[in-house]
Length: 349
Ligand SMILES: Cc1cc2nc3c(=O)[nH]c(=O)nc-3n(C[C@H](O)[C@H](O)[C@H](O)COP(=O)(O)OP(=O)(O)OC[C@H]3O[C@@H](n4cnc5c(N)ncnc54)[C@H](O)[C@@H]3O)c2cc1C
Ligand SMILES: *[C@@H]1O[C@H](CO)[C@@H](O)[C@H](O)[C@H]1NC(C)=O
Ligand SMILES: *[C@@H]1O[C@H](CO)[C@@H](O)[C@H](O)[C@H]1NC(C)=O
Image 1 (spheres, rainbow, N blue to C red):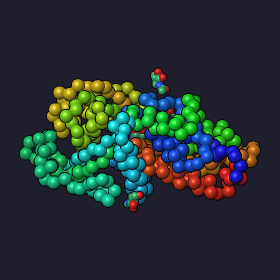
Image 2: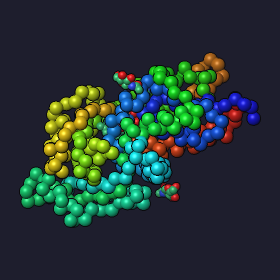
Image 3: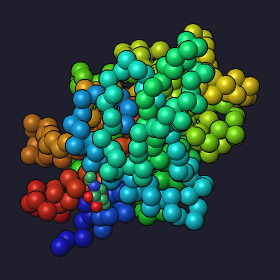
Image 4: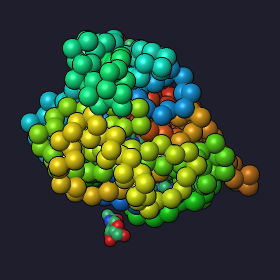
């Protein structure tokens, strides 16, 4: 073996890029990894996420892949949760009610065997929400799922992951990368984690924004998550996130007062004390929507030299990028190991 190190670039420093970079640097010996990104925490979409670990708006991504990614994410989250300082980097256990309306087809989420716990809600649990129905006599929410899961708060987790990455010799560079072609010859492998921008950069027409608006409130008495239709309440370590909207192809990043009213009305119907809580801030983010998550390998070349670049795309995680991040990073590791064991990169080393 020669002494030349395998050179990897991870493009993007949201939760998808940071988990990919950390999992790779912790698992591959003798590797030189650089995160190249335009924005870093606290300025990424991931930083504003509710951080709930549960699938949401993932297009028609193959169900078995989603199940596998979540299952693997939970292995990592559990590992982090067990660390003595897990409280500092925003990972905690969370219980949740996921309510469904009577008219909705009860598509029971097939995660009983994967989540820490998941079961149908009992009638007495459902009764708590009878006053949140518009009609006095009838309960709007007639079905639901009780789940035990985690929250992963990116504004605390991303700085921690970056620090872990650097402490293991990882390099960080603030720069835009519009074309992956420009990296040919400079790196052996590139992990493309540019989120919503991945579409523009590679002319992938299928990437689109799904606009999300949220409140962050101070309500330390709320320790339990509720999802119901468009509305969700997700306690984090020192605030509670209230949402939300899921507006397709809407690029507007300004807070819309109409959405604010809808969020406050909907969430305070579920938990009335929310109205009395102090608002910390309001925020809008654009989820990287796609008909399916793109996690796959591609080989690109510049047509002139014989140089090739191994690319692993990892973007388009819609409303559950935090949820899927560690599981996807684990699959990125599988691909990198495949590339290393193929002759392709070896011959260059
Ligand atoms: C309101 C809201 C609530 C949400 N709640 C949840 C939730 O509860 N649970 C959950 O799992 N998910 C949630 N999501 C979804 C989640 O936030 C996203 O799926 C996730 O953040 C996507 O991560 P990412 O790393 O792909 O993208 P981003 O966080 O957007 O990161 C992309 C990175 O790539 C960089 N980049 C982009 N283009 C370039 C370029 N050309 N050159 C260099 N760098 C580039 C950016 O600067 C950035 O660092 C929510 C989203 C919103 C908007
Ligand atoms: C985040 O954005 C703000 C405002 O544009 C900027 O001042 C700050 O330097 C950015 N932070 C990082 C880590 O890039
Ligand atoms: C989930 O992961 C665990 C631990 O790696 C594994 O034993 C189990 O078979 C996995 N379950 C599913 C449904 O993939």
